[in-house]
Length: 485
Image 1 (tube, rainbow, N blue to C red):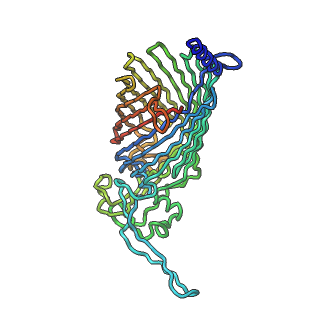
Image 2 (tube, rainbow, N blue to C red):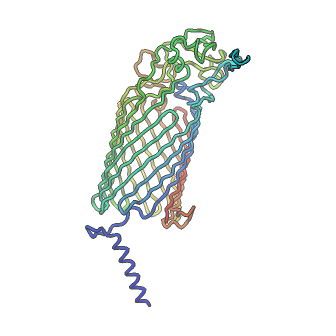
């Protein structure tokens, strides 16, 4: 019986090995992916700050976002893997809600009376609370919340010896005011017994804006110089800096956008090298070119050399830049205007060192330059510590610093004679710190089960982010990695 068992085992093993041989080379070939794998990823993000770009550089930046992604990787054969990534992100934003910051105002209704053929229609206006707003509170505007939908498909082919890999991908995304279509591909070559890896990737994104202007500029764009008579603002008092009613508000600097296209092109080159059993590093460089509408059309700008106008309650004008302002909103002089092209050049380095079988050191550094005048540096460190065969914890820290774009200035500092201007603090000079921790559970044999799938990995991370301009945020992520039988 022992001889029969050994013989059967030999035959079964031989058949399995033969099935894995390449027919033309006779070289043993392991499947790139044995079974379909599924990743379920979710994250929650919330932030607060006082420099809302929608309100010209002041006001609440409260925002929360919940995102979920499902990634399914399916082996098509020994060499090819097809992956689909479906994402959904739902957010609420106090800042973007103030695209239309005004609440209150009159309402009207239409009634019909009289016999058939002799009916009369009457429109009745019902006075209400005069319109008002504030950059320090969210309004009930349609842009207060939204949902981003995204789909990415990626096809990867590996050569028989697994030393050459190529991939192609397609992406689609859409939200209430923006849509994107992307194409990309890449080549990877491994040398030196797979200790050296060189990758070249390229992507094209063809994006389109749905133009949304701040309410006052939208009405001006529709009705022209008479917008105060026939538009949303008909019968609404506009106030000057002293709180007096005026008809002088005329945002003549504003010109509507004639193109809504934004195209992005990128090429990435990276080199990874295993130096020793304990040391690994990689370097990378990207070249990114953007063209088209690179401004955000609903972000207001206020000039220092023009009069200022408001809607709301005059008593709050002197405290406009304070959170005590709960009743007046300043009308825009114009929207953000930026050049139609932008060149970005980041270059970076990763260096990992395995201190011992339980502790590793992961480091990252990136230098960034663009032709808008921004330079930045990013450095981060992560220290995974294995506390058991399946559990790893890792504290992490990240530091970031950047210079300001040459087109940035704070609230009411820009001049109307400038060609380009923004008060978006993402383009200002600042430094930021991010620190947190993670917990990782790994079971390479996937003994745990969920919905008929094996659980290979669970990963949780939490980070706190704080910026020198007062913005702070919390980010939590949770990921599950499953494998099918």
